[in-house]
Amino acid sequence: MIARSSRVTRSKDNLKSLGTSAAGIDIERPGALSPYKGKNYVLAIALTKGVDLTKAENLDLLFSPWVPVSDRPGPQAYAGLTLESLKTKQHTNLTSYERVKPPPGGWKTKTGAKPVLADFTPPDAVIVFLSNGRVEEVTREQYARY
Image (cartoon, rainbow, N blue to C red; front, side, top):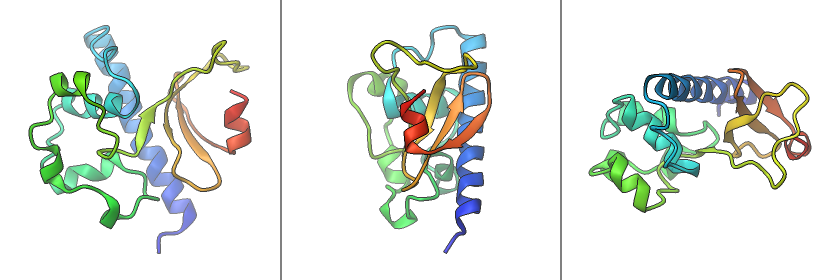
């Protein structure tokens, strides 16, 4: 069994990689990711960056370490996945990370950094990639106060 601290580190690393990639895409092609919501946003990041999702070794990036490998779809599930298909159908089982939607009234952060991506799979926490590039582990109560 993987230690909790190792899982947190791996999830933070995945979210940092995905979030940094999204920021780069936004600089190179402003608005390129705006059609994508929720989990499809994460998949769009990977496809736009050229990650070959039909190779098993590339799929760890898309899943929280709290999701057992046996519960993840295999590479065949990603065959035919395109940016266009992400616009028309939600693919909720192809990643555990997601772009977070602001609550009604917007985010109320003290630093101005807003949650962008999150891992909601840890049973006692939420791991969040923020718009300032930081990744934080917070309690569910803290997340609700963002």
